[in-house]
Image 1 (tube, helix red, strand yellow):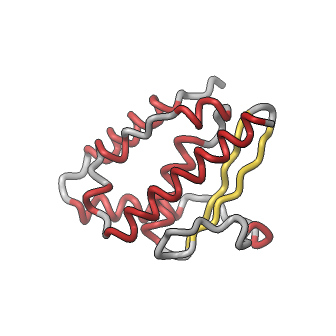
Image 2: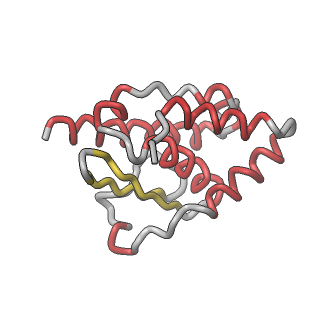
Length: 141
């Protein structure tokens, strides 16, 4: 099975969100999406894996498997879990170089950033930064 590119995955998310006119429906979709995230093992819910700068607690675990970065994430807040879930679904399973160089345009296209509180928007930026940092770090190894 061929892996979809980061941009193909982003386009799918943009399309999924375009089905909803109302932001309440989009939040609902985000919450449902978060519920599809596989549970993160408690052993990975460490301070080291925690993304700082988020209002709620978010953990991100990254592993390099067969040249691809596999991300797992969780959050104690339902909307945040949906947001990190979207990022994981777009970036996980790609090479460090692809992740480090990715332009995550879907966030702007679905209007997510302007519908988040300033602290959540900062958290979103922290999540992206952390994932790209993993990409750069794995590239260097």
